[in-house]
Amino acid sequence: MRVVQLSAIDMTQVKLLKKLNVSSKNQGFQVHCISSHGEYVNEILQDGLNFHAVDIKREIAPISNLKSIYKLYKTFKKLQPDIVHVHTPIASVLGRIAAKLAGVPNIIYTAHGFYFHEGMSKKTYSLFFNIEKVIGRYFTDYMFFQSEEDYRLAIEHNFLKKDNYLLISNGIDLDNKFNYNRVDKNSTELLKKEHNINKEDIVITFIGRLVKEKGIFDLLDAFNLIKSQNVKLIIMGSLPSSERDMLSYSEIMKYQSNPNIIFTGQVNNTEEYLYISDIFCLPSYREGMPRSIIEAMSMKNAIIATNIRGSREEVIHGRNGYLVNLNSSREIADRIDELVSDRNTLYKMKQESFDRAHMLYNEEEVVRKQLEVFERLRKKVR
Image 1 (cartoon, one colour):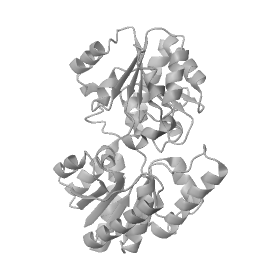
Image 2 (cartoon, helix red, strand yellow; image 1 turned 120 degrees about the horizontal axis):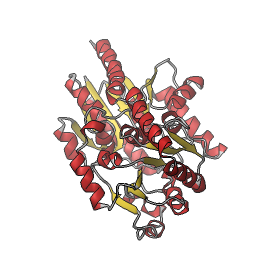
Image 3 (cartoon, rainbow, N blue to C red; image 1 turned 180 degrees about the vertical axis):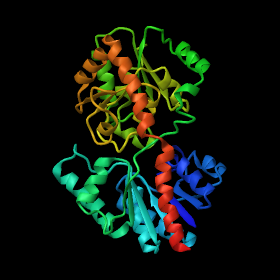
Image 4 (cartoon, rainbow, N blue to C red; image 1 turned 45 degrees about the horizontal axis):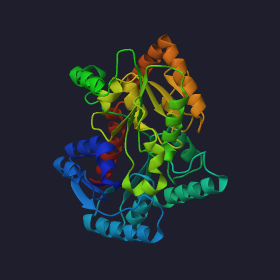
């Protein structure tokens, strides 16, 4: 039985879908990954998966989008998949249209976070809400959800013709990569030494693209407002080349000279940085069900995040962290100062995060729910 996993970029196939793809292959499914060609293609092939390159822009561009639909249609007609499983906002719309036109019998959409959100104007929200509803009702057979808010909204507004909704949540590899007890202590000590982090320092971390919608400027501004001493800020992530015109580098560069702010760029050892961290901050404007928060929770971090969909499901205000308002540098700074000055509360929140991650966000369970649907569809074919 052939399963196509479709995303805009190949990084999604490795960073978000690797466990699902490899588990599907191990259970006898023939897995085909489709996305734009990038630096992760070799890893996809090394996992024993099939890869097909189709350029998919991550923005609304009518001519380019139509070309992508046509190329996807041709690819689907050639592969004759039993399931097309789509991810990421633009790719999920284009992919479902192409799959329906190609006569694919089972089209599954995972909502990693609906594109419309509460921060939009009513007009913009309504536009994208109705796009999701139309594509859902006429081009989708099953919908998987990471966010419970999205799940309930879709059911309430009848996004599907049939009751094929499944809440899968989000999860990470708690047994290996994000196993707190298996982190290499020698490596973490070297990281502290490399970045001049002392025993008395409180470390704050951020992971994400260095773009405005991730709240990076709000966090950097907040760091200038804190009153506490002995605080270090580690920024993990970079600015994708496709988004360079969205951000003035001078806004980032003016913080480069601060010895207490550490820019690492993209790293593969996020678990080691999070291990030496005390507070994780994600003041994003829009999220689905952010994996970075779960990763930080698994490494015993108190969380400061904006009160938005997804984040507010992972962070219980006052228990494993704090929820703050959007565009609120002052509020972020106050919460950081509060946790730095009250170590007892900080350590309680760190432990609460760890416990919550293990109780709710194991990737094994997320993958199991999806494979159960794949297996049911395979039995129908037989």
